[in-house]
Picture 1: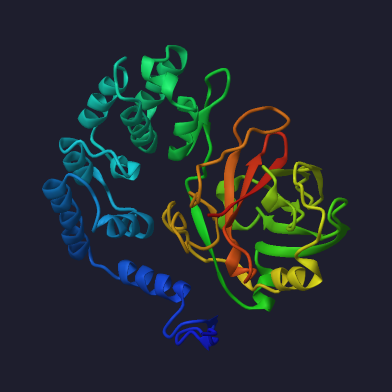
Picture 2 (picture 1 turned 45 degrees about the vertical axis):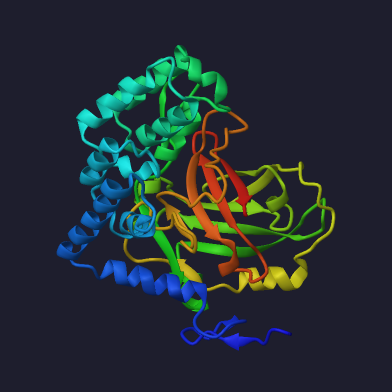
Length: 370
């Protein structure tokens, strides 16, 4: 039977089922969580602890935990204590605010040679999300003197560290891979977009030499806006890429200047030679009306399915966290922004991620989807 197009009963978007679209359901749930009183949040936190105590895992209340964390940035100390007592180390965000004694015991566990490698991986993620000097030093120790369980892991401790928003270079110097502040991109008007310090999808006059698609500035950022002081960018940067090729590559790069000029410097690993977007897709991308939100949100606000687009904070990695190494200096780049692709192009899936190395004035663009 042929599906019949209908309109979302809340926003009017075209859908193929009766009711409201996923984006509206997500928005409604977000607003519900944002409206919770402190007393109601305390009750919710107790619900989470109760499930861990009874089942030894987080199942039915996991979605509640994730939303409380993302939208309200709850203190997880109490949850971490209960989780550790019940040997629960997933999801790793449970340990964001774990008390010092729990962290000390987890470090003692990870230093053992005969630890199960799967458990070691979970512990590394939990410790990375907590962060701090003690955790950093323990990661360096594990980097210099790997334990036996390391042989069965595919990546080094520095990779796990990026889930917590930090890492280190080859000289073992600490590097932040995330900005602590986050602003959402919200629906506005085209006139408001023209005045917004952050814009998504701006056409250029260039064409991709490989597929012929029009090159775009996937994002334009005016760091002189007071809301973006945390970026410490005193000028305008433009994230240039081929929107047709980049989703098939392992990451595209461009070099920028703070006067708004930028040029593509790599990204030829894509095998695509046909322009699938064509002018129609470029026009749709450029016609979005997203603007920078007025107030900051918790750092993990967009780190969820249907999390939307944002600048700063943490991304929702559909696959693994993928902090690229700068092609110039070789150091880990810093996650800058996320674009939920289907909010600006109906037929596209996944997220676009933007990373930056301010020292070399290089920007990386990558794509993930299921």
